[in-house]
Length: 281
Image (tube, rainbow, N blue to C red; front, side, top):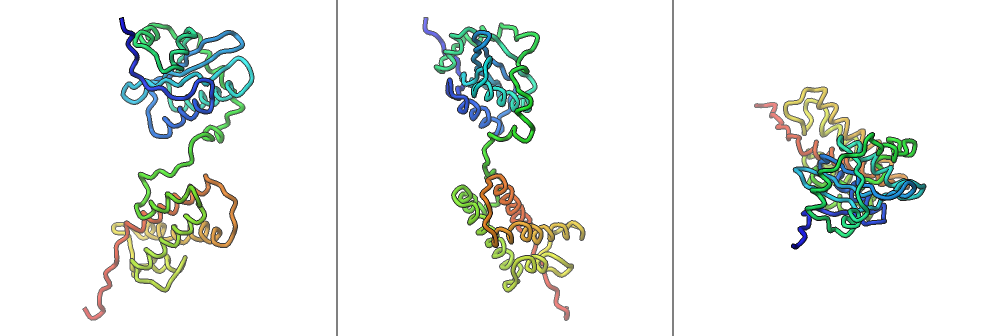
């Protein structure tokens, strides 16, 4: 009788912790919902190996191969500790199960069977819960939990006029940001007709006051003023410093700055051109 393989996804690489961390982080980063996480453990008192079986979205099972270990000090236990610290932020149902070594071997060979999954569904989780003991609390402060998440631009929310610049952020973020600032000035000059103005003065004249050439329909005065001030403030706080100083590379800060610039483009797109009424009308 032919063995029927389980139709599940496999991620990570057995014995390589970083690959397995990346597999989990990538799933979270791209919005997959974790319904349950099963920690699959095999080994002896001082040397355990761990894989994960994650049920995601609408019942899709994803196996993370055994790149995690515990019972001694080293990269495997540290990686496992970090991964569990992240997982408990995104999943409320985490349980541990003891499985035979052959079970993990089949995961590592991408060869779990339907019979394996049926067997696992009949097993009771470890009681009392012990998986918290795999986490070294002091080594995973809140500020470091996101350290392995990729610093990527969420292209789905980027103004289309910035897309070509967004692609350049990886190669040369400083040039890309400066190109973005120049493009924003160009767009506002052309839309407002204030072709001789630049920087904060351009934004003040374009958006501020009852007779400004550009305005936001349906907003009260204070909200319009707040939006107008964002243009001048962000330019003064970020663009001017970037234009006149050599800044140390920092991908996180550069992405945050790009997202602020993107928000200015979105605000500009939502403005209307004010019709100037003739005094003789």
